Image (cartoon, rainbow, N blue to C red):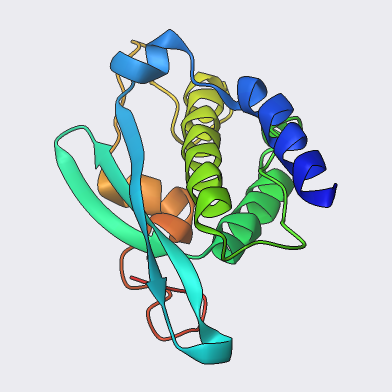
Amino acid sequence: MLYSSFLFFLQTLSPRLSPSPSDRGGSPIKVVIPRYVLRGQGKDEHFEFEVKMTVMDETWTVFRRYSRFREMHKALRLKHPELLTLEFPPKMLFGNRDERLVAERRGLLERYLRKLFQVMLASGTSPLRADDDGVYRLSKRSVCEFSLFFKKGVFESSSHGTG
């Protein structure tokens, strides 16, 4: 019962997180979560999601646990009111090691990140917005300054994800 309720919730959440057509092709920031990996042992076993970022002509990859995604979401909502309506994929009470649910979560997190950048690129107050001429002055550095979540190596010594 709980499992089917959770799957129903995920299905109803998915359309609200789906990327727009401009995010699929024309965005200067591309984000993909191609896979997840199991790390740790025993009680410390957890999944980390590979986040592949491409900003203009720079590409890099970081690995992050779900808890780091959630921390980033909370921090960015405090700094950027335009993100208050952006929904975040829910925490799972059970099954967070179930491959099917982790695969579903991977897709939801990818759509969440795409929507996050779509909102921030369109916002007039965003540090990622285009200048008055409609030109983006984006770089790996500007995205990492926007949120340390995207900076390689930041969390590598903690239990919540590697750089």
